[in-house]
Image (cartoon, rainbow, N blue to C red; front, side, top):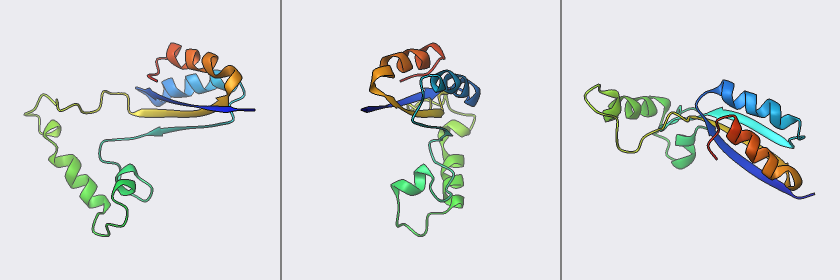
Length: 114
């Protein structure tokens, strides 16, 4: 049995959960739903800490400062610079290769970006 991965981005956890319920009918091997941000939470295991692993001076306070200093948070910016598109919920699923195309169709119909 060969496995295939699916990474799909959603606008809300509810959208992702709806897609996951439908995917479970296809016997999903493994799955998770996670929310992410540009700067991470700064806690252990966050995206930010993974990038700069081994940098002891980076703390959750550092992540907060970086997020608050971003021009898109000032109210004086159009928020450009290619920031988040509102799809900040990631559905990760592992399915059997035989149902992969069907699973992709389910995700797209549920509003997910693949």
